[in-house]
Length: 252
Image (cartoon, rainbow, N blue to C red; front, side, top):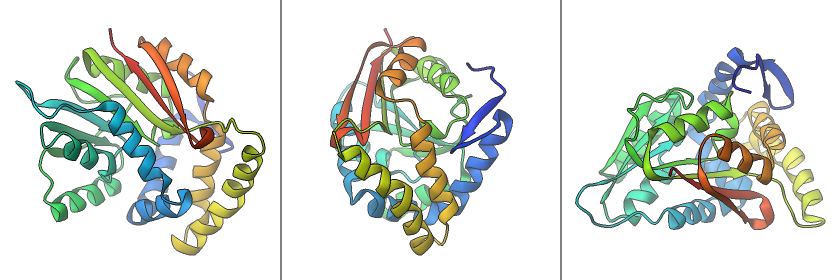
C-alpha cells in the first residue's frame, strides 16, 4: 500500500523514505554509460522494445494543437526523441526525471542532435509538478520499478492525463517461455553485474538493477495495480518471451 514504511531496494528491505536517495545514487553513478550498458545488457533489444512502445503510442503527425506527452524517468531522452521523430515534430514531450545526472545527459544529447519539442524537468514520479489533465499520453520505460511507491506513481499518471489519455509502461517482466526463464535468470544474475564491473566500473549498481527486476510484480499483478489506479482497458504485450512487457491503459 502507499503508506507502507518499507520498500525493496533490490533484494534488501529498506525504509521507504530511504529508497529514493539510494536509487538516485545508483543513477548518478551510471548516467554517463546508461545507454551503452542498455545496449550491452540487452544485445540492442531495448531499442526494439522502445520502438514498440512508440509504435503503440502512434503519436499523431498533425492536429489543431501539439500532442502532449510526459515521459517519466526518461532522463537520457531515448524515448522522447523517438516520439518527436515519429510525430514529425507535432508532439511536445516533457521528460520528467528525479535524477539530475540523467537529465543532464538528456539535455546534452538533445542539444547535440538539435532536437526540438523536448523539455527536461527534474520531478518526482510520486508528485509530478503538473496540473490535472495536462497530457495526452504518459510513457515510462524501465523506470517504474525504481519508484519507492509504485501505486502512488500510477495515481499521479492517472491525474495528469486528460480524459481519453493513454498510459504506456515498458518494463522488464516475467519470462513465460519454458527453459528460457532459467537461461535469462543465470544471465542476468551473473553476466550483467560482471558487465557493469568491466564497462561501467560499477558492479553494485548493476546488481541492484537486476535484483530490482526480480522484485517487480509480474504481468498480471502489475496489470491489477494499473487498474486499481483508475485506468480502463488495461492490457499488456509480452516482448521477447516476457523479458519485457508493454502495459497500456486508458483514462476514461
